Length: 140
Image 1 (tube, rainbow, N blue to C red):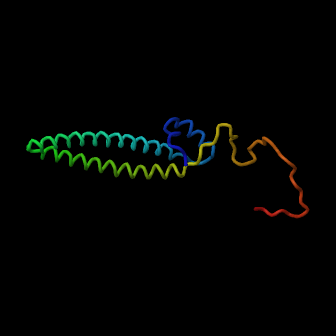
Image 2: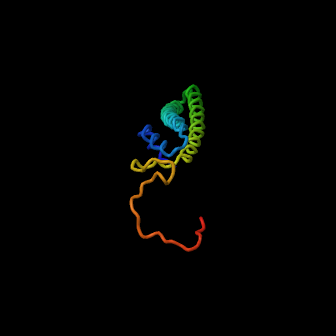
Image 3: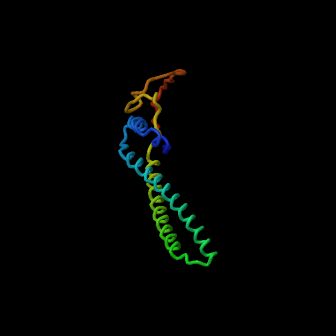
């Protein structure tokens, strides 16, 4: 699973490095968009909860003074509905994000040679002698 911060901080470089693996990573743009939406919605939920808390304090004051607080109560109910809608959408987006992160492989190092298979790798070091057998070796 890839770290979402790699995509948040340097999307283009991360995408280019993933492309060297030879897969289809076109979904990364969707992942970035979902992450941005989620973060914005979480910010909105925070603002709505703050507003709800302020209204709740005002309602408490009005009730202590034995005044009508029905207008503020209806506003609090509306805020609760909005918060619940945002929370549902955040949960759905989070599941999509988690799935996309799980199917995304690790980012290869910059020093890793780019190639299709092991033949494109360069040999760095060889240790010992390769044994020669007088019988056919089984593949495993």
